[in-house]
Length: 388
Image (cartoon, rainbow, N blue to C red; front, side, top):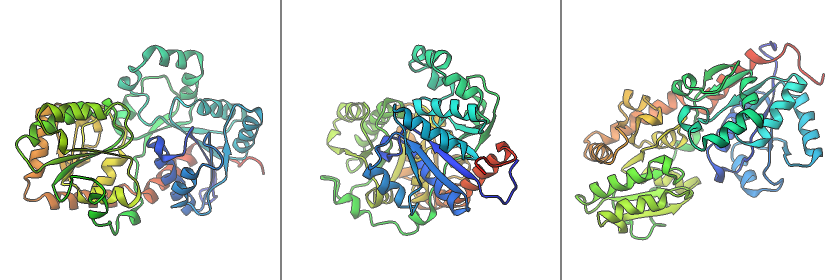
């Protein structure tokens, strides 16, 4: 193993670092910033264009100067450069299961005898593998994805359920390390008007916030129906849905329209920066009735903003229930509507939000999480650093 005080050279690999493409880029940014602050060297490998402004802006907020990055492509020179970077790394952290660059990087790691940690990001539980199962079996047995999982030095899981539910053979030790937030981003939240003033028809009305990918697996159909049932009895209640639409917007709209409250549903697209934080700050409650989550960044951010939350058991965030900072309810519309009503009517809703904020600050910040990943790396690193 490496000397405890020796800085590590860490390479993070994922297909996309642009935050418009899902949660892993946010996780990679948080880990990289925290690891660099601990004195370690961090580099990236991704297929984003070399001059992608979204990547530069997003990562530059917490990583200045930006780490070096190898741009992955089908060009053999790209693979050769990736091999050189892997050879001079102590450990490689692969994010996700299905990006092809991860398979290439894993094969190179084994060839060069560099250990790699694999973060499935929720992709290896039985429910996820049941989606497009034939395609995934082909990927597992014929395209190298199963080999990538099997030979990982460790599996970075986000919650105990993911740790216990890995459905593919593996020899690496599954370790639970959750996600986090940057505490300084939540010290001084913008006023709710920064968001409210951009949404026609919202005004000062109380609203439920759903911020995630608008995907059927996030519970859009259930939330649309629950909102319809609840809003039919509460003429001032609105629902704000923020995130990229992947088939869920229509499901939300169907439920709202069925109860005649479609004009109180606001689909606002992606939110980031001050508008996102202002949307959290102004919400009466945050709701994510997901079919499955690894460790939801959106729930964590809602709690960091001091908002009570309504979630489902499939979100795998029982700390919400234990810390009394929200309600965990079954994933069906009547239960969701009842859970939302409980929070909306709670006389201690602000206290619930305060408990949630403290939960995040005590346990789920990137400096704390990054230190846990470094401890994990040191258990799998080879005794000497390569390239010396």
